[in-house]
Amino acid sequence: MWTDLAVIGAGPAGLAAALAASARGVRVALVDAAAQPGGQFYRQPAAGLGAARPEALHHRWRTWERLRDGIAASTVRVLTEHHVWCVERTPESFTVHALLGPDQEEPAEVHTRTVLLATGGYEQVLPFPGWTLPGVVTAGGAQAMLKGGLVVPGRRAVVAGTGPLLLPVATGLAAAGVDVAALVESAAPGRLARHAPALAGKLPEGAGHAARLLRHRVPVLTRSTVVRAHGDDRLTGVTVAALDAEGRVRPGTERHLPCDTLAAGHGMLPHADLAESLGCRLDGLTVAVDPEQRTDVPGVWAAGEATGIGGAALALAEGHIAGCSAAAHLRGTAPGPAPAALKARTKLKRSAAALDSAYAPPAHWPEQITDDTVICRCEEVTAGSVREALDLGAGDERTVKLLSRAGMGWCQGRMCGTAIAALAGCAPTPAKRPFARPVPLGVLARQHPQEGPS
Image 1 (cartoon, rainbow, N blue to C red):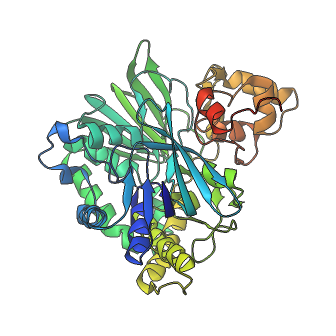
Image 2 (tube, rainbow, N blue to C red; image 1 turned 135 degrees about the vertical axis):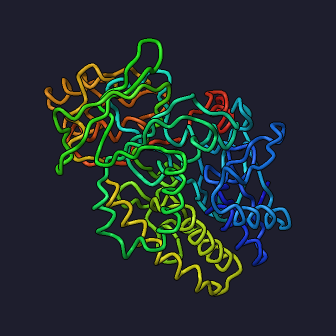
Image 3 (spheres, rainbow, N blue to C red; image 1 turned 120 degrees about the vertical axis):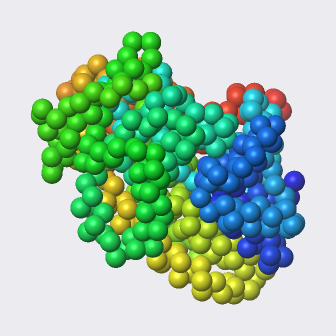
């Protein structure tokens, strides 16, 4: 199919962008891998589950209703279960290559004049001994099970790591009947207090979560971390310990918490694979954009978590600005005024920067990793093997990968790249992946069939 603007990603940023562009007379295709729009933030249970009150699982439900109803009433063509693996640039247009359905074997293409990347982010989990045990899930994974499947990962849970996501995960699990043994946050309360002016707008939301934690009697352990997860065939408990001011474990503070679930998370990382393969400039790990959310590749915009982790409200503002700008470009007019979105973006970016600083992972967390701790789960490479590669002269992720196979598996370093970089003592770098997800060889062969002899 042909369209004027292909918006890749149907989370808050993609929905806002699609609505803004469509309202200005642009043909829009909204492409997403999930079975229905919403992204992780507005993930919905399947209709067959018969959820009586899905709004109970969500924050800002009325905003979701406005987005949902707006898309339904618009001319936006929604293409769900389209797993985009590549965006191909030609002199005059772009081709979005996707794989259809849960099996991801049948190809589909969307031809478009312009592209808007709203690819979101994914969770960062820093390894620790025992993190590969059944029963250890990501914090976002636990939330996705609850929102999308109306199921809980266990009966007694510990929620641990760092970042604002831990609060809604802990309160959501507790409200669903899970006995939350503790919320273990590595950041100290004083770090948040230092950023109080920038976080003033977040106080009501934070206070609401704090009240729910109190109501469900969830203990909150700040400046603490999970040292080890225990169990043979599955998780039976965790050891937690306090951290000193420098982020090191304080000897003698260890305590054991029995549980059958550990929901762990250490913040988010941007999904920038498609932007990188298109040649867009990256600022560290994020997609670099100008004030109109344009990348440096003509015809390509980006918005939301891919341009910097900042939450749903910031993603909505950036998506609206990007959609207005893309529509103006396509219609040959000046960008439509969006003063409210511009003002919101400025304010929310300050809050995002403050949260990023306050919730930085402990500086010395690699010291807790034992040599037998698995770092790369795909290839089963341990920390000991990574350290051997470092002893052989490796000083970056790529060389560690060549010497140990860490990062060569199914996820291509998405899950282990940050940990490898930390062990190597270098900053994480974008991995140059030609495709955003695995692609069957048959699909690739059909893209550019080999010509026969002349």
